[in-house]
Length: 238
Image (tube, rainbow, N blue to C red):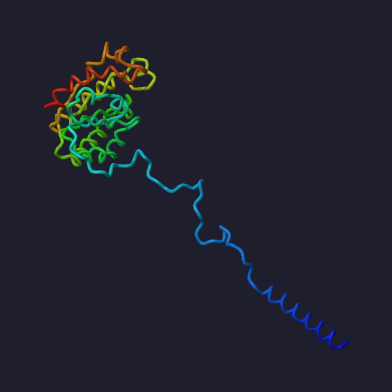
């Protein structure tokens, strides 16, 4: 009897030792950590790369050609031109802070609309008293880009508007520089066989922007676009 008990105890001890040894040799059954995985999961602090909205170009085909595009910076953007021409398809592609270089890069935004006519006002975010010639040459590049992308469209070069005299002094771009720049734009229009449209005189008083037409000395009030619309009306409606 005692021998049988000892035999059973010995068998249990051997079984226990065998089981522990096998358990120590098996790999742990755990999920792989993010650090050890071959592909790190994206996190909220690392968003997917996307093109800036300001650099995206429309991809949808236009339903029909627009009659006219007004293209420029914030001066143009403020204009409610569609209200002056309700029977026509008008697109305002003014962009706050846009430089001539920006507008040249964004020409596909214009061409996707297959416009019949393009009215361009640009240079306010480039021009200083010392770089009139350089700014005019940048404008030449914009006209070239529009001509290449929109060969069927009529391009109109609009003059820059005057600014408040105090703003002009503080910004380093006096109205005298704007007038000289406009002269160069007129020369460009003649060189390219385009129409130059003078907006400056309609908005100036003693060489500066009329105070009653602006809310900040640079941009026009919402109800101040009437003279602009009437000046371009013959070209928009022809």
